[in-house]
Structures are given as C-alpha cells and as structure tokens.
Image (tube, rainbow, N blue to C red; front, side):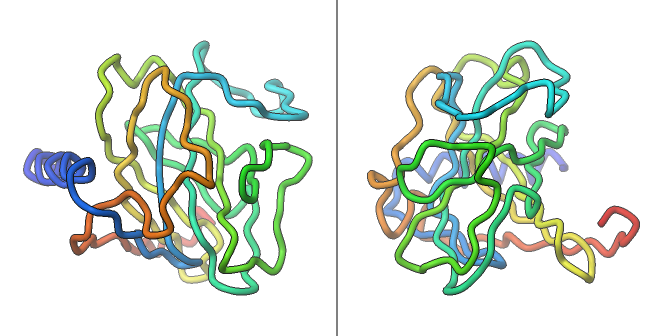
Length: 190
C-alpha cells in the first residue's frame, strides 16, 4: 500500500470514532464491527496445535456482521490479512454464543442474527497504543478469484471485545463511501 493510500486509510479509520455508524457492505451481507484485543477470548475445543500458530503471543480479531437471508458461513470462507500476514479463521458464532471450534458452519442464516468470525493473530506485530488499523477480509470461495474487503479494525489492546448484542444495528463504521471490493483473478490461490 502506498504512503498516500495508507495515510488516507488512517484518516478514514480515525473518523470511525467520531461519526455515526454505517455497516460496510460485503459479498454475503454487511460488516458491523471489526475489533482486535489482547484479552483472552473464551474458545471451546481449541487445540492450538491444530492451527500451527507461528507466533508466541496471541491477540484476537473478531469481525461481526449480518448476513443476507439463507446464506451459509463457515470458517473456511474467509482469511484475514493484517500487517502483511494472513490468518485463517478459527471459529464462527451467532449472537453472544461462545466461540466453539467444533461448530465450524452456520447454514441458512437469518438477517436478524449477528454472526462473528474469530481470527487468532500475532500480538507482537500490533504495538501498544489503542488505534484503528487497516485489515483485509478475503473471501476465498469466489469462483472468479478472491474478493477482498478493506476493513478498519479497532485495536482495543487489553479491553474486552464488544459483545454482539452491544453492537448497534447500523454498525460502528462512519457513514462515508468505502470502496471495499478488490478482485483478484489468481485462480491458482483458490
């Protein structure tokens, strides 16, 4: 990302704390919130060896969204790109449920429910200041290549992640036009 794009994105992210909310549209629905915390998240049935984490200290990135009616969502649908590293999704949940790695998919979504994807990320790359940082949610199941969505993640350091029922229905992002979709046609990476 060029310095100009990074600066523009940083300004946009800074505005997220000052403007009223608006969801970010994406392929399956609308993203309402994106946060990263170093506070441990309760994850049932997590076996760290199954995920081959290549870092010592964990942080937890959660993307919360509403899906269009009757969509399916699973841990295999998205990858998170953050600070030039890619992370696999480890869990998905609906509402305020506890993340459980044994529950890897929701079929036939309801537009009234809130769903969340959980990614475990390298804490050492985040720094210490609370701030907003750019991240990219990559949809991996697109037949014509990957679709990616730039999302401003609120890094809250050692503060607890916001519970799904506390996120406003119009999200936490600013009401500005966000150009979030980028297409890649590299079919070898599907």
